[in-house]
Image 1 (cartoon, one colour):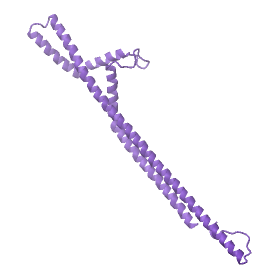
Image 2 (image 1 turned 90 degrees about the vertical axis):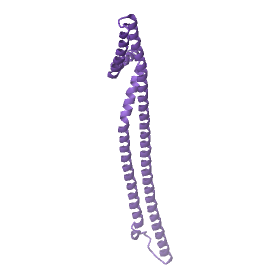
Image 3 (image 1 turned 180 degrees about the vertical axis):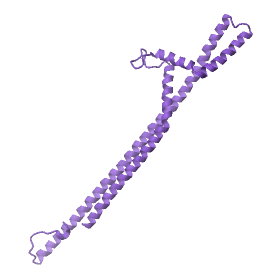
Image 4 (image 1 turned 60 degrees about the vertical axis):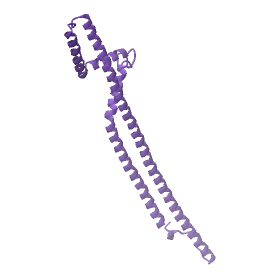
Amino acid sequence: MLGAGSSLVASSSASKSAKNAANANNTLQAQVYAQNQQALAPFENDGRGATDQLARLLGLGDSATGTASNPYTAVQQQQGAIQSFQDSAPYQAEHDAGLKSVQAALGSKGLLDSGAAMKSLDNYGDQFLSSKLNTYEGQLAALSGTGLSAASAQAGVGQGYANATSANNNAAAAASGNAALSGANSVNSALGSALTAYGYSQGLGSSYGGTSTTPSLTGWGI
C-alpha cells in the first residue's frame, strides 16, 4: 500500500504541474495577443475610417433616404465628403496656387475679365477637383487595404491564440486524466496484491489445521 500511496502523490503532483504549466502558457498567450492587438489597432482604425470616407465619396452612404442614426442621404453624404476634401488645407493651398497661375496667364493676354477667362477658370476648378479626387480616392483605397491587412493579421493572431490556449488546456486535461488513471491503477494493483496474499494465507491456514474463520487484513493496512 505504501507503493500505491507514493503513486497517488506522484500522480497528483504531475496533474498540478500540468495545470500550472497550462495556466502559465495561457497567460503568455494572452499577453502576446494583447500586444499584437495594440500594435495593429491604429492601422485597423485608420483603415476603417478610410473605407468609410471612400464609400461616402463614391455615393455609397448609409441609404438613399437617410436613417435615424444618420439623417443625411447618400447623396448628401457624398456632397459633404467632397466639400470636406475641398476645405482641407492641402487642397486649398494647391488649388489657390494653380488658380493664380491661370489668372496670371490670362492677365498677360489681357483676357482676365473676359467670358473666356471665366470659362477657363471654371474648367480649371473642375479639372483640378476631378484630378485631386482621383488621387485622394486612390490614397483612401490604399489606406483601406492597409486596414484590411491589419484586420486579417489580427484575425490570424486571434485564431492562433485560440488554438494555442485550446492545446494548452487539452494537454493539461490529458495529463490530469492520465494521472487519475495511473493513480486508480496503482490502488487497484495494491488491492489485488493484498487480496491475493490474504487468500494465500487463508489457504495455508486451512491446509495446516488453522482454525481462524474471521478474515483480518489489519496487517495489510486495510
